[in-house]
Image (cartoon, rainbow, N blue to C red; front, side, top):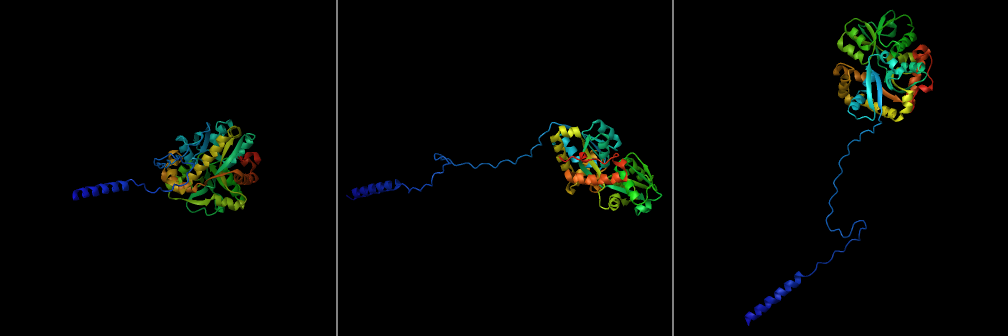
Length: 360
């Protein structure tokens, strides 16, 4: 009897445990269905991977090859980043660059239309405009100031001290000659100073370094080159400061600019706009102190200066700039007016009309 009671108790216990294990858990109230998520989806949603950083978009090509001439000096120094980018295929336009030692080397080719764009002295832009009956346009200014008188010794302390002296210079027929003549005339020294012109800045810098010229008018970067080769040389006068005194604030000494063939501009508006944007970016790079080392290396790589140390010292002194649009017109026209008033031949015999200025 006891054995039967034990078996009966065990059976009751098993049945009780089975009933407990069969109970359902209380249902969790569901959230209102999200109409954007399928209700039948039961697999976990995989997290969306973060997108890869986008690579810089390559500039949209214009399909144009621009033939560009520049002078070995500040006008070309401002273009060196553009030259590098063009070689790497990172520009909207394709480019063919020609570097010259003096304006005389490229004037004939500009007139013939062998270059689409050229970086030249600002007064030459006006002269070419007059000589070609308006076939060129001034796109932008690229160089301000940069002319200096250097000497061996301590003789020249002011413009007045130049009386009876001989100055060796470059840039006959372009901005350096007319700027010097204007300053001398404004200081009562017209006809009282001799000026001997050499064909290239590098030639004159070498004469200074060798002690064969005592007083010379040179632009940067050739001033720095000469000073680095002859420790007896010093900067005697800053012609930008002397111009400002003579002009009484009416104009700036606007040394260089970029011009283009009018027909090319009219037929290739997109390519010209791309050039101006790429050139402005190049100037910004070259004039940024944070890029000085790389810019100096590019100046040497392009054959503009022989040594990086000289390029590093010269770049901050070169007055490299980019001025376009209405500001360009205002600055350039004021400068050309002063030259015209002093000597009409400085701008080709007539003051250019508004057709000279490209305003986009």
